[in-house]
Image (cartoon, rainbow, N blue to C red; front, side, top):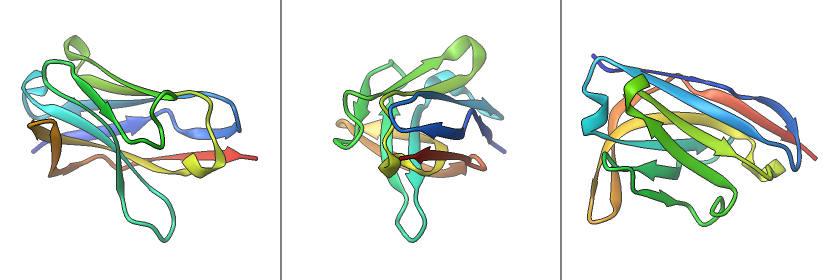
Length: 121
C-alpha cells in the first residue's frame, strides 16, 4: 500500500510563502510521476503542478511563475514551493502518485491526507 503524507500548510498573509512537503512510502518513488492538487470548499479538486520521474515539470496557469514543484528521490519526497500567495490559493493541498504520458498527468488512487493552506487578504 502506498502512503503519502503532506505537511507544511498553515496560515499566511497574501504575498507570503509556504513550502509543502509530501513524503512517500510503499512504492518505488523515483519511477513515478507526482502531482500536487488542491481543493477549495465547494469546488472540484484541481491539478496544480506535476513532475515526471525525470524531473520535468508542468503547472496550472493560475500558479505559473509563483509555484515550483521539485522532488528529492533520495528522500522520497516531493515539494511545492509557493510564493506570492493569494487568497484564491486557499485550499486543502494533496499530493498524488501518478504517471505522465505526452505531457499529461494521470492520477492514481493514491492520495495523501491533505494539508490546509489558508491565505488571508
